[in-house]
Length: 406
Image (tube, rainbow, N blue to C red; front, top):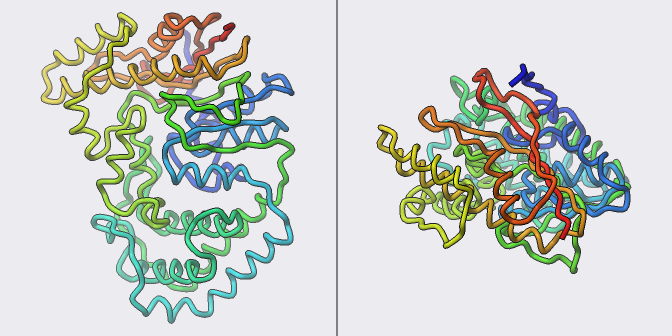
């Protein structure tokens, strides 16, 4: 393979300062620039689908380009967040929302001295110090009293998204790795500092919300293995990036946001939700994986060979990882099969996915995707390298492309 650049402009790093795309940081999110390029290839009257919505990048890019897009996800926080990112707002109501927030600040110090609700995050003072935490919980109480809990009011949701950004900005979370990790220690913040950070974030979010999309995008609750029908709509272009087969858990990245917004109430819910996700192994999902058995579905021969090689490795988790890889591509095959009934003739598919390694054994995601698509009757199947993912020469990100001709 010829030398391939890492292309930071094709990663989440490119997104963080781009309008609505930078509202919240999720490291596995794929690049706005890459999605924009794929959307530009779409005929103007086409309907776009993203069956793995994530943070809604495809939806925002589609709406910005004057296109129409449906997105699916199983995570209630991502559905809520994605629909808010894709919403259209009135500038006057945005300014009123901002004014209501600023009226809360004079009460913050007193509220921080009260007993306020704190999310049941394990070892929470690893995230926020004992001085900062009461200020954050006090601010949350004031927001809840003024705006209610996160829900259907899109203007109130902007305040909650700003609060999510605040809690991560003041935490010990570090983003210097492919997954969110921790800094060396927590930082102490005073009330005025919290107010300043929150004000700056709110200004940025409300300012970017003023842009009125020429197109539309909506996120729906759906399992991509059983593609639903939304108003009998069918699609012309699928642009998506499913989870990669590398045990990267989206729920792990989202937990601080989801606890503070009460989309998660206890640890076991995270494992239950990750079990529903393709590629999820967080918490109880790992123990369930040990008991998982594949449906009677014929899969690419390369998959069986790869999983057997992984299972035979000299490692106590080798059998579990072989099972994990098997289930991932089994579920993706079910997705590709279900997708066929939701596509128009001639529909194009673009799937951004990375390969992986387990104990030195390559899992060639792109060729496994290609063969699944071929077995299911898709045509014009090919893949191209998008970028090198890190310093390891064998890890790449691919765009797998196909057509559905009916």
